[in-house]
Amino acid sequence: MENSLRLSIRLFLVFYISILFCSGCVSDYDGKIPHSEPLPVLNGVLYADSTFALNLSWSNHPQEKAFEPIQGATFILKKNGLHISSKYSFNNEGKYFFNDTCLNGDNYEVEVHVQGYPKLTSQTKIPYKPIISITKTEEKDNQRPAKVFDLDVTKIGKEIMALYVFLFIRETNYNGNSNWEQRGIYCDSPFADPFNRFYDSWAPEGFSYEYECFVRFPAENIVNGSLHTRLAFLGENENIRFYVIAATKEYDLYYKGGYLQRSFNPEVNLPFTYQPIFLPTNISGGAGIFAGIDLSLFEFKGEM
Image (cartoon, rainbow, N blue to C red; front, top):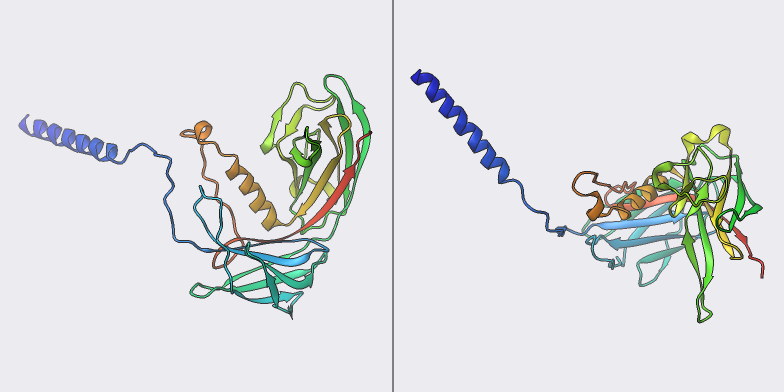
């Protein structure tokens, strides 16, 4: 009986101590993100008919927007396996411009040396341009005025991991100044990535979902390298621009991860639904992104 009592006391003490230990590990989140040692960040998004350019800066605290440029770096560059000139012009924002023009199908390798840090290396390919057309088909006026467009894409190469479609509308304020503002897009395709869509009961006729900021079509959803779908937006006589990006794997992972990270709201997502979003990088020795894309622009002028 005495032994049983002693065993019960011991079990109780172990249980009590474990509760104290665990409760000591719990504290309120004060919303402050600790600082860390800055790292070199290399960013370069290459597309056809553009000047080869790279941005080099120090990493920064997530709650600060300014990034300190890195000057005086040295570069070793290769294009399609051959060395190209590393002479550059530099601006105060940390951007290095090289005397080379990017073309579809080009393969680039970059090696960057920053004094006191390991070298940064990466490589990418600018994808071949798919055949893309966007045509205006009709106008809807069932609930709110809307315009509908057909999107057709063929010859999507294997190096393309996703297609992104963006919409910008030219808006003019009371002072007569105009700016291009990004808008959401309605899409009726079952092949679009649903991660940034929401149901809209006031959507144009034949549509149910609006996509925030862009519509993404992952390559695994695209059959036989071709895509046909409809796009729509709410409006009447606006000047509009569609941008279509054919993204390599590196750009696709980085851009989607960046969108998810930007759209995280602590007041909504914490504490139960939050999952940490880590930005992938293909920069060995540092952080950032070095990726090739193909960029197409389609502009439609509104009726005056």
